[in-house]
Length: 395
Image (cartoon, rainbow, N blue to C red; front, top):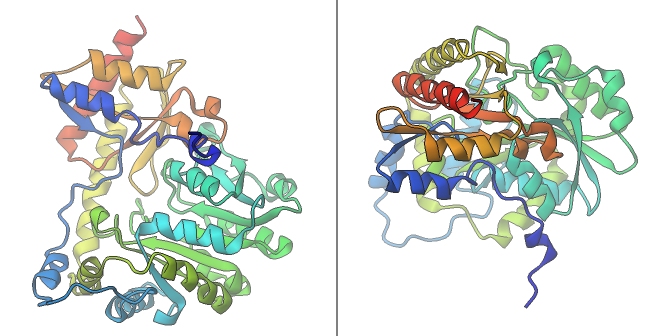
C-alpha cells in the first residue's frame, strides 16, 4: 500500500538524524558528548515541580483549549515585566513552540503561499511548512557577514504575489545572530509596504550577550496587527520536556480563528500548565545567573574553536548555538565518521550537520551546528574531539 507523498517527502530532522550512530557508539561503551541539540543542562526551577506536587487533583481533566487561566495570567505578568503589551486575551497556549508555528502557518497562509525566511533557519520550520503546504523563500545570509540580513533593496525583490509573511528567529537558531535595530526595522518596513504578516520566534530572547540591545518587532505599533509572536518556556526555564509554548498577537481575528486549531487537539497538558503557571514565582536573579553561566560557556567555546586551523565561525551574540564551516566536503559523513572512529579517553562527539538548516542542502554541506548547552569541561572536551577528528579525517 502506497503511503502519502507528504510523509515520503518530509525531511528527517538533522538534529536527531544521527541517533542510530549515537546509540551504536554508546553500545561500544563510549560516552557521547551531545553538542547536537539545544537541551539545556541547567536545572529546571523547583517552582515548576512544586506546583504540580501541590495540585491535589482527583481527576486529571482537559484544560480549556486556549489554555488555563492561571497560566495565561502568569504569562501576562511576564510580558508586562519585559514591556510587551499582551493580555491573556491575546494568547493561546500551545504544545511547545513547534505546535505554535504549525497553528500560525495554517491560520495565515493558504496552500502554495510563501513565507520569507532568513537562512540558515531552524530545521523544523521547513518540515512544519511542508505539512501545511506552505513554501519558503530563503533570504540568503553568509558566515563571512556574521549572518547579517542583507539590505532592504536585496530583500524586496524576493516578495511576490504569493508572499504572505516574513518569519525570523531572534536571537537566531542556528547561527547565534542577534538582529540589530536596523535589521528589525528593515523587516518592519518590508512588512508594512508589502502588507505581510510578521512571525517572530522569540524563544531565546533572554539569552543575549555582551550587553547587546534586544529589539523586538513588538516595539513597532504601526505593524501591531501584523505581528504574531512564537514563545515557549522550554529554553527560558530549561523545561523542554514540558512542551508548553504560546502564541501572542494583538490581532483579534487571528487569535479568534486560531482557537479552532487549539480545539482540534483539545488541550495542552494540564499538569505542565500548572507547573508553568508557577514559574512566575522564580526569583528575579534566576535569569542573571544562567545568563552569566551561558556567557562563560560561549566564551569557552569560542576560545577552544579558535585553536582549530581551517574552520570559519562567528562569536555567537545570543541563544546557545553557532554554525561552523569545516574544511570537509560532507559534514554529515564527517559527523558519522567521528562517532565511529574518534574518541578521547572513552568520549566521542555528536554534532549536527548543517545541510538541514538550508533549503538547498548543498549550501550547508560543509557546515555543522554546535550547541553549547553543556558545562565548560564538556565543551572543552567536545572541541578537542572535533579538532582530533578533523586532523585524522583530512590525513
